Amino acid sequence: MIHVIATIRLQPGTRARFLEEFHGIVPDVHAEAGCIEYGPAVDLATDISAQPEVDENAVMVIEKWESLEHLKQHLQAPHMLTYRERVKDLVIETRVQILEPA
Image 1 (cartoon, rainbow, N blue to C red):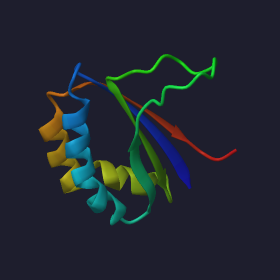
Image 2: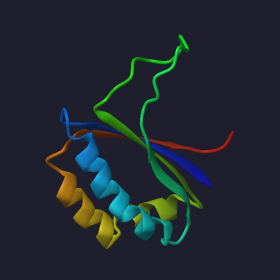
Image 3: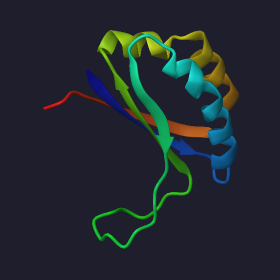
């Protein structure tokens, strides 16, 4: 199993529109072979000092896949290609961390 944390930096004020598009692909991703977990998360304001400042223009995608091959197939899935085209003007940068359990 692998874990993926994707941090998506968005154009200011576009997070709601981005999340609407994102939620539209979630059922298709959940139906993909090897998908264990896939969903968006946003910063929660807390009084915990170690937490960085809340970023209103970011979405983190938390993923778990059975294997790296499943993740690679996901990245090329037709619904992901059309989704990326629909949100390209909203996204400034995407950073991906691919992790394994330790």
